[in-house]
View (tube, rainbow, N blue to C red):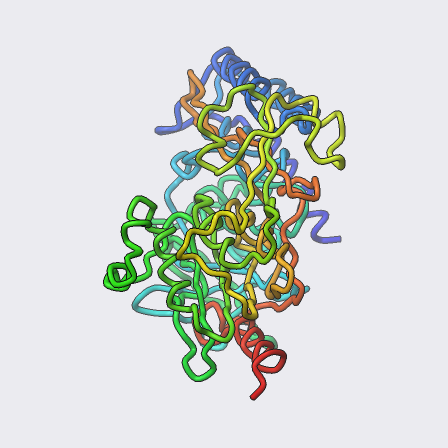
Length: 489
């Protein structure tokens, strides 16, 4: 009941304050100039936004709300908020305001907040994770309950309204990233400015409160767990850590490549691909392999194309992405994603005609044993994949691909669900830059990646100590599972 009342009051506040008087550096925009920008955005989306036909009714309805709410003069930050809220309703993680933070006071939480996805209450953990210190804000008090006196769930739900609405599992995850921007949150919640913030904490029985000075820099969430690839020598289990699809800074021992004459073949490939080949060569004689992709925000598909040929058994290609565009010629966009043309009548039968009619070109991405060179082998031993709710975009593609391979065991929590290939447009008058999905991305099932993440076979949540590097229930489960199921003496 109280939550509903809070939501109602907040909604009324947002309506009243949407276009309040401008001040300071928050430049005023005339009604006519904003309308011109909205027309520019509408034309851009009609022509290029991949999901336009799917989201057309929502987009047009929200656009009308913005137009109807405009005043003779409108603060840039207020226009940004209105646009952000509209884009959030599209439920597309690749579509949002670019450089959102620059429109608000640079005040950020001086700590991280992460969630335990499947826990019903006391699920948000507050902690610091830097080279110097990894700890809870108060010893033995892992859970955050309030910020500025606002219940943490209301704080995050409010943030989600401006980043990604829709299914709670996904919207919460995206809301967490916005929730750290205290300058923005205080504006939309109509809270007073302050250089500090009161944080309510809970240890499972008792409550506590700390007052912390806000940061002027948004600290980036580290990829958790903060591990490197390694060999568990006692059990001869390889551990391949892939925390990013764009960078993979394993310490490459190039001597190995010179000795095996591999460097000539791989020297033209990117460092992430090279790292995969190097690590798989190291793990060639292991009894089992753990592939840990948790905390991976995405990037390129190079790693997917390099890794899958080692794990596939059958010669038939494994398709892990089907993409479509509103434009007839998307240029090099498909090529750099290893995608090949697909005829419209070959598109998945589960995709409705209404959806199909919005596209003008179609592609698929796959990998197969035919992609193996003479130096790529079939890893014919047990494989366990660890995933979580931070895996997104290309990492979601990787999770989906690995989960399709017969015999691979998946452990952890559902991935974030999303794949889009963003482009951007800069609005002429306000100079607000908006990213949007140029590519619609489907799973082989015909389901949009945005609709649902990859669900592991074994659902295992992290515990609070995981976020400060003192435990890892998911990895422990995987190691125990391998030892008990496959590696008995």
